[in-house]
Structure formats: C-alpha cells, structure tokens
Amino acid sequence: MKKKVVAAMLVTCMAVSLTACGSKDSSDKTDKTTAKTETASDNSDTDKTDSKTSDSKKEETRIISVKDVSDYVTIGDYKGLTLDRYTQAVTDDDVDAEINYELQDKGTEVTDGTVEYGDIVTINFTGTVDGKEFDGSSADDYELVVGEGDMGIDGFEDGLVGMKKGETKELTLTLPEGYSEDDSLSGKEAVFKVTLQKFTRASELTDEWVASNTDYKTVDDYKKSVREELEKQASTTADNELYATAWSEVLDTSEIKKYPEEDVKKAEESYKALNEQTAKDNGMELSDLLEAWDLTEDEFNEECKNYAESKVEQNLIVQGIIDAEGLSLSDAETEELKNNLILDYGVASIDELIETYGEDEVNESLALLRVEKFIVDQSTVNEKTGSAEDSIENEDAYTEAEDTGSDLTEYDGSEETQDETEENMSEESIEDNTVEE
Picture 1 (tube, rainbow, N blue to C red):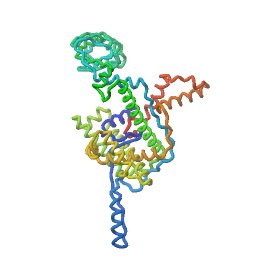
Picture 2 (tube, rainbow, N blue to C red; picture 1 turned 90 degrees about the horizontal axis):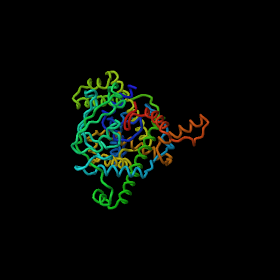
Picture 3 (tube, one colour; picture 1 turned 135 degrees about the vertical axis):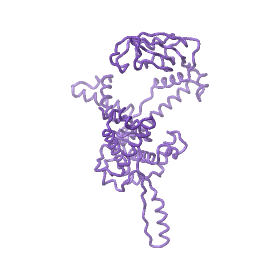
Picture 4 (cartoon, rainbow, N blue to C red; picture 1 turned 180 degrees about the horizontal axis):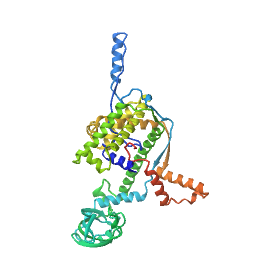
C-alpha cells in the first residue's frame, strides 16, 4: 500500500532512535518541561529545609508539556503482565558460520592461482542484451563470495571459478525474472563481460591462525569464546524483544482521549524540519524529495501529523507511568540505562549523545527505556527457547490442524507455512525504533 511505502520512506529520514522498542515506538524531539515544587514556611528553619527539598525536585525532567496526562490518555494495565522471553539457541552451525566469516574476512589475497568456490572476488562487469546495456547490467569493484548466489543469475558465479587475477571473460546467461526494472528483459539472453580485479581466500582454522588473529591460543578455546559471544548476543536480543513486547502490550491497551496541541505541533514541526534538512543534505528542495517519493504536499503533511500524534501518545503514556509510580530520569536504574547507551553507541559520555541527537531525544529514549524496565520488572516472565515467530507458526499450525481435524504432529514446519506466517506478520510494523503509521 502506498501509505506503508510512504511511512517507511519517511522513517529513513529520521534521526536514529536511541531505543529498541515495539512497532508503535518513536523517538524524536519532544518538549522537556520543569516540574517545580512550591514550599511553605512557618519559620526560618523550616524555610531552609523546604527550600532544599524544593531544589532537589524542581529540575525533574518531563517529556510532555502537560502536568496531568489523565486528561489526555487512559493507560492500559502495565503491572502483573505475563510475558514470554524467547532466547534463540546457538547451534554448532551458528558457531561455524561466525568463524567462517572471520576466516573469510581475514583471508589472504591470491596472486598466483585461480578462483575457487568460497573465494571473495572483486570484479568489474558489463552486461548487454542484443548489444545494448540495461539497468543493473554493470558495476565496478563489485565484491561477492563465489557460490553464495548473491548475483542472482544462474551460472554467473559458476563462470568465475577458474579465473585468474586480471583475466577477462564473457558469460552468456539467461536473465531471471525481476533482475532488471525492465520486465521485458526477463528470460532474455545476456552477455556479461567480466574482469577479475582480485580475489582472496579464507584462511584455514588452525591454532597458529587463532593465536595470530584472536586473543586465544587454540581452536577449541576460540570456538568456545565465539559460542559464548553468540549466546550473549542472543540473550541481549531476547531482552530487547521482551521489553518491546511489554511496551507494545501497554500501548495496545491504552486509549488516547485527545492530544495536547503544543506537543503535537512541536513534534510535527520537528519532523518536517528533519525531512527538509534531509532534502537539503541531498542537494534538493523538499518538493523534489516528495516528488521522488510520489507524495503530494497534503499527503506529506498528513504523514507528519500521524507521526506526531503517535509520538505524543507514546510520551503521554510513558510520562503517566513515570508520574504514577514516582519514577525518575535521575535514579539509579536510569543511570544504568545511560551507561548502556554510552556503551552501545561507543561514545565517551551521555553528553556526546545529546550533542548528536539532541537533549529531548535522549531524555525521551531514556524515559521509554525506564518505563519498559519497570513494566518488565512488574511482570511474570516465562523463559522459552526459540523465537516468537516460531511460536506463532506453531500456533497457526495447531489452529489449522483443529480446523481440518488433522493431528498436530503432522505439521512439519514447512517453508510454505513459514512464508505465509511471515507475510501476515510483515504488515504489523515498519521498523524497530519508529512510530507505526
């Protein structure tokens, strides 16, 4: 659908979000207002005590302009949820694939020999049909791993096997459907003139290679470390998906009453300005960018409004939970989240992130992360192996088995069932860290 394409295109222009959230997430620039505490005094000593109390509270960061969010949104249940945390198991094949990637990446250039399957080649090529070049028919310094099928043309990579550095040869091949934007070329015979610039070959996994290229001494120790790192990554991914699911459940059960106009207007203007800057950075006017996206100005304005309202809705819910639970963007949990962001982005301090993305952006991201953590901490979490997608596929299969009267054990996890499930799921969200349109 056009709107889906439009939303995805607009998302690519946004500043990088600092959070990993669900399909309705957003992290753009928002208001930060100050909550001030009044003090009363009966005598001078009380005045001093109250003044200190006031000073400690008055600078508390807020991500929405209104003081009472209950006038604007009804927040769904966010305590006592039951959530599933899916951790993908790390297999021997996963470990081998990671190691093979490193062996290829740190391979040796071959100067006296011929290309073999698995080699990484750098080529120049030009393709013609009936003597004429066509879209996607040529490239210089194109890199690929021979045998992985990245070229998408049967016989192309096979034709590179046996070539020597500097050699040029012609390959006569049949263009597959969709290779070119010109559909009329599908099934046509094309001639590709290919020159092999250079090629590298993966290193052999030995104790010597491990000692020279890693922090370990033996192959066994290296494999163990790779497995541990992959398991750590799987655990981090499971946590991110758990937090995203927790937030999504609360967002789905919350109901917006009205939007604070000040926040929507600011978010809308900020989003428009971001797209204008994107156009400028590419030497274009905004009108040129909209034309490239096949968008009218009215459609663009509508998309900006939708985005702004979704973002403000998120901020209302986040701020509402912060207010209700007495959370803070300066407590110990948030400080830990700040440290995690610093590590994830490889910066020296949170100030560097603020300089890059803006203070409002960072505060909003921290607020969302803080609330997600609170929701998860208040939930019952079931540990499961696999992925949420696997669970959905099996549930679909079970439902189908019931409908047809067949036994669940007949389900074999076929690609057809997986493809159908993934197609249904693909419409659920545009991209992590974005507002769902």
